[in-house]
Every structure is written in structure tokens, then in C-alpha cells.
Length: 400
Image (cartoon, rainbow, N blue to C red; front, side, top):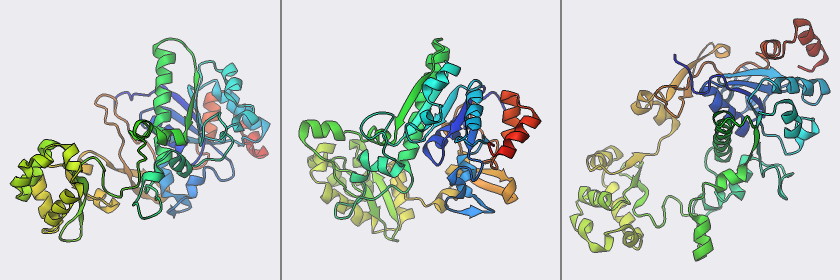
């Protein structure tokens, strides 16, 4: 295996659950050395979330792959001092505590910058490090609500619903990684040597994904509402039932694609009708076109419908469950279903593969999420030169 893209980058992860740790995981997948700091008593709560086997969540093994785990009691002065010593040896610190927590421990950015002027500090929180809401507790679900996503998710005659995953946390993790790498470029490639703070708010990460909602409201007074599976103003683009009860998603809103779809359906007349020659005109007749398409999809089982659509080169696909994903040959061809050995399970565990695909410096899965404190001795010995006796005394005091 060749050198990985982030080899040599040193990261200290001081967070838990999803947003901050997800950012650290992405860095670890591409070669960064990530040291995860956990509480000595129970560690990151995600170790016990959802499906647990042999005392550990299956989610944990994915979320913390390639990371080293150390335990430090951050509420004790000696624990805080260990962090200050480690900060001298790292490039990036990731934390997702409530704003003010790190300062309370004497580990705020100004404190740590005095120790390491090149330190890049990623701070992920519900509302950001300033503003009137900074002190409010915030989870990804609240960020999705405040950021505008929940308002437009679901059907108009029902309450707003959630996307089936913690999308607000995951978006924040992506922005955190983006910011970190830009900061590394500024520090190292531009040669400034300067560290900086990356302030990521969950609600802002969601809000930044809200497409044209703001300018449309500003100039036209339009408030985007829940529309279920349709995409208003983009026609046709919807989910349609097939004859066997399965659903197919069809995106035929391009002018040429629309004609190919209509021809595949045997509606050459509709394909050439000037009322449907462009997206704006088609959107005026969206209900009619959706009805026409679903009458056709209901006439055949899903597999036959897909054959017609694939032959006509119309973007379409099934709505996959995780079982469908695991059985799909394309996922396997793209190495998106990985088998990773997990000692505690005595077997391998399927995990999502790594993205993006990089031709020269691809990411790798080196190991599954570690045991609590598995690397404490190694990190404290190698990074800050503590002796075995010093480490043992810290353990006896409950600091690590």
C-alpha cells in the first residue's frame, strides 16, 4: 500500500456520539493518526447505541475504525494537563462539547494556542460558538429542524418527519473536514504556520444545503412546503408504483430524457406535444404527467419497467433497503461492502467502504473501533514520554 493522503497528520478527537467523531473517522480513513479521548468509566455513549453484541454497539466498530482510544478524566486537573501535553504533538483538535466547556477546563483555543500556535481546532456545536443561542444544548435533530430541513420533509397533510439517519450530524462532519483541510493548506502549503478555529454549527450545516429556498423567499415570497415524493417545478421527477407493488424512482425532467421516456411508454404524441417541450411547461401539467407515468408503471412488474427505462437511457432506480444494498453487484464491484475483522466478535463485520475513491492515495480500513482505552499506554508513552510507573500512578488515581 502506498502513502495515504493524510499520512503524518495528527488529530486529537475530544468529542462523542456523531458529528465530531464522524469528522475524525473520515480523516482516519485517509491516513491521519486519530487519538480519541474517552471517559475512563464508560467511554463514548455510542459504544452502547442500537444493536449491541458482546457489550459493544455494532455502530461503534464503524464510527471509530482506524482510531486509537485513550481514556482521560477531563474533569480533573491532571487529566487536563495530559491534554495540554498532547496538544504540543498534534495538528488538529476536534471537540463537540457545548460552547464554554473546553474553556471551563482551561482548554479553550487561546489556552491551547499558547502551547501550539499552529493548532487547528474544530469546534462542532448546535448553534455555534457565539450568538444568542450558543449556550443552548443542540443535537443533530434540532439542527435539522432549525436549519429548515424538517419543515420540508414529509407530506403536506402530515406532520414534518425526519430523514431516516442523523443527517444534520453527518453534514456537520463533512463541513468540519472541509474546514480542517482548508486550514491545513493555509498553514502548511501557504506557509503561514498559523492555526485557527473551525466553528461548525449543526443548524448552519443543514441550512447551507437548503438550495434556493432563501432567494425564492426573498424575491418572490415563496415558502417551500412539504411535497412528499414530488419535486415541484421539476417535472417529471417522482416515485411511481409498479404492478407488483414495488416502487420506481424516475427522474425524466431533462427535455431529451422526457421524450425518451414518453417514447418508451408508447406515447410518441406526448413526446412531441409542444405543451411539454420544456420543464416550465411540463411543470404546469405535473399531475397529468405523473398520472400518465404511473398508469404505465402499474401495468408491469418493477423488473420489466426497469428494462424499458434502462433501454431508453432514462435515469431510474429502485428504493433500496439495506438488504438490497448488500445484494447489489455494483456495490461490491465498487468495494462499498467491506468485511473487517472484529476480534471481540470472533468474525468479520460488514462495513461501508470508503469514499471518495482516490486513484493514488486511497483510504483504507485498518482496524475496527478499538476497545476502551486500548491505546492509552502506547499514546502516553510515545507522545509525551510518560514512564510505565507514571502511567500506572495515573490509573490508580482514576485519571486514565
